[in-house]
Structure formats: structure tokens, C-alpha cells
Length: 525
Image 1 (cartoon, helix red, strand yellow):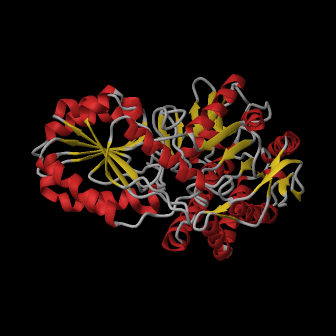
Image 2 (cartoon, rainbow, N blue to C red):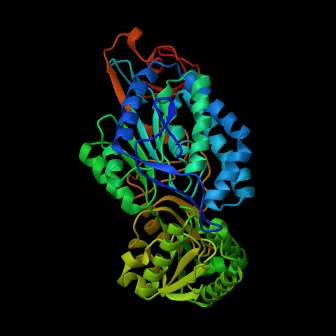
């Protein structure tokens, strides 16, 4: 049985049970066994993290930046082993997906986080010289990170965006591995712990548990020693954790579910229908559709252009091979969601509903319903079919399409394809007005699958896309604020202030608000 990482030691878990990951390409259990940790492990990790947090508060920021850069270097050196492990556990393509896209993105996130640590811009210093009050964001406390199944590197609990943001804010991390890729997470944690040692950080800055009971998970996120939690996964499990954290007054940042509506006007289809079909096919079927921004809902207006689009997409869905899904649970969940939609009255246009017996796969599925059907039961028709499936809603007219958008829950993204000549600009304005409040990112004339690691990116949105509409899980330095505490220093002597609030700019480049003006200057200049 594989060891857990607690308090700077790889040690045998206090386990109540064990589990194994499954190779989705063969449906066979992979050899390593991993522990289901008891509360004793959780308690030990929390105590070690609390002690590490006290130490980290006095650690120079240069050491934290060094850790992040050393860790990034380690991941590049361990690339081959990491890619092999992630492929075995997820079925995602070694190249380009894992080796050429996701791992480089992960490394880049860590290095961007290191830059943010050194610049200090994420602390948002505000100085009011007249009132004698100064404030900035500071570290919060131990952060628990629950990683998802669909990004074994870039959103992993011990290497992904939540992890990088929590560390950049100066917090230790207790990583809870996703049970779909525990060995990959163990390998990542080995590289992270080596970087902890080389940078001279407290040993418990990084800790790893593979699995806990549901009760212990809820107890973990609500413990007084826990500063905050980052979670990406199913809505049911996420809301259970949120309820526990809320009762204890603990912040928890959730990414739960999203159908990511795409609206395509007849003018756009007349202009470049073929291009849009290609873009849609790529977006829905790439990686077997296992992206949180996968376009699971398409809204069209009744007419010949829309009929041609639906017919062409259905044909392409039937012709394209079905990709491998991440696990038996994902395959089962996708089949169940498709059944829910068909039971509600959606017509199956592509896909026979079959599941492969030799691997985790479900046939590419395209469904259709009318706008009237959707509006009679919008909750059911927004069932997330996570994977290679999408539902087309054909509205009678612009007003009905707007009503469909008005009935949507919160989503990560929303997209509008319109004519480039501006002939349907008034239609765009009406549709965008309805869609924008319901999404975290509004796109024009591009599919939503890609999530750029940009400081302007919002990978968030209204509930149930996330648990809070005001924060992003992607985009440094903005994402760091989730794991920070705002502290105001009132009439505190200059020598006692954090460096970011001193009269002299500590880097000469940090942006600070001084008496209402953002500047890189020293106070008084």
C-alpha cells in the first residue's frame, strides 16, 4: 500500500480501507493500492499544516518563489514518468494532450505564481496617509485542495491552479488526490516535496492524502485549523462539503458543473456554417468532451440553416470514433445523463447509447429538443452530460431563444456566434443581455473549450458553475485572492508594517494605491 505524506514523512496511512485506480483503456485495475485515510491521518495533517503555517508567515517570499520554480523544473525533469502514469490512469493522449499541452501549462502556472510572489501585486496594498490606515492581502492558513479527474496535472491537488495560488499566498496545502489518478498525484507530490526541501520551506508545506470517507472530508474542510478549501468535482459532493464548511464559517471555493451554452444565429450559419461545424465538433469531441467548458447546450433559431447544421453535426458525430472516458464512473454518469435527457423528451440524433465493454467509452451523442420543451422543464434539460455529448435546443424565434437563456442556471461560459457584417447586431444585443449575467466568461465567435492562463481570465461563474461568482480558479495573480485574508493596519508604527505597506516600495515595481492613486512610487513622491 502506498504511503501518505504527512508532516514531512512518507509514512504508512492509518487506513480504514484501500482502493485502486482503473485503466480506462482496458477497464482493468492498476496494481498500486492506495489507502483510505482515517480521521487520525486528517488530524495529523491539519496539525502539521497549522504549525507549518506559523513558520511560513516568517519565511522570506524569495524562498516561496524558489520552491515554485524548483518544483516547475522538477516536473520538466520527471516529464516522461508523469506522462506515462497519467496516461495509464486517465486514458488521455500522451501527445499532444499530456506531454505537449497540459504539463507545460502546469509548469507555466507554477512559474507565474513565483513571479506573483516576488512582485507582490496580488497583495493589493492600499495606503491612506491622511487616516493613517494601510491594508493588504496576507496568508490565510492551511488550504485543503480537492482536485478533479479530468486534468491530472493542470488542476491536480498538488500541482494545479488552486495549489499554486494557495502556495503563492503563503499557505501550506493539504492535497486530497482524485481517486482516478492517485499514482500520478503521488509522483507529483514526490517532486513537490523535493522542492520543499531544496527551498528550505517547512516540511509540512505540502502534504498528501489519497482518499477519506465523506464524513471525514466534511470534517476536514470545517476544522478550525483549516483556512480555506478549493474543490473541483461533482455538484453533489461539492455541496456536501460546502454545507459543512459554511456551518463552520470556513471559505470554500467550488467548481461544480456547467453546460456552457453556445448560441448560433442564422446569419452566422449562412456566412460560415462549415467553419462553425468544425469548431463545434472539435470542442465537443476533443478529449472525449471531458472539459469543464465543454459546450453541452446549443441554442439555434428554427430555419433551414439550423436544420443543415444539426444534420451535418449528427453525421459527423456518427462517423467520428468515440474517445476514451476517464473512468467507469464517468462512463456510467454520461450514460445516466443521456438517459435523463431522453426520458424528458429529447430526441437522439446521433449515438445509440451503447457503452464499450473493453474500455470506458460511450458513443458520441447528439440530442435535440424544441424551445417549448426546454422551457417546460429547464432544470432537467440542463442536466450536465459530462463527456462527448451535447443537446441542441431549436427555438421558434428570437424571443423564445431569449427565454431559454433567461431560464439558465449559472455557467462557466456562454458563447454567441453572429454574422460578421453586423446584420444581426440587434439580435446579439438582446441575446447577450440575457446571457451575460448567467456566465463567468462571455465569448464571441469562438468555442469555450480553451481556458487561457491569463491574468484577465475568469474561470468561474454564478452558481452552480461555482460556489461564488466573484472569484476565478485560473488567472494569476487574481486567483490568489481566494486564499488570502485582507488585513488593515491602523496607526501601526512604520517599522512594524509588512513590507508592502512601508513608505518605500519594497520592489520599486509593486503597484500600490496611495491616497487614491495606483502607483509604483514611494509614499510622498
